[in-house]
Image (tube, rainbow, N blue to C red; front, side, top):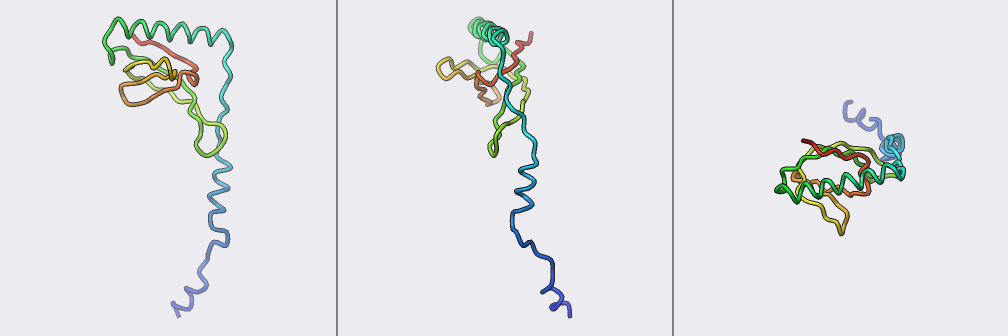
Length: 116
């Protein structure tokens, strides 16, 4: 009798449908376009960071960054915060290299604070 009952067990008629609905419902943020004043301020802060890296040895200058991380599956993304020591700045590729292995695109940074 139990073997016969297994024939009528519930099944998913549309495999992956629930996952597709959940993915569509997942919220993402849109990247904010920075004002020219904020862009100028970030440029000044990046120059100060570069100068601090030249004066001190790498991995001794610590920063707090807020930056936009694009979503890999859909349009948009989210803002992330990180505090880490800076290993260097790749001016050609416009990236900040952190000692913990993160590589942050300068164009995605919305806030930069050099910590004492």
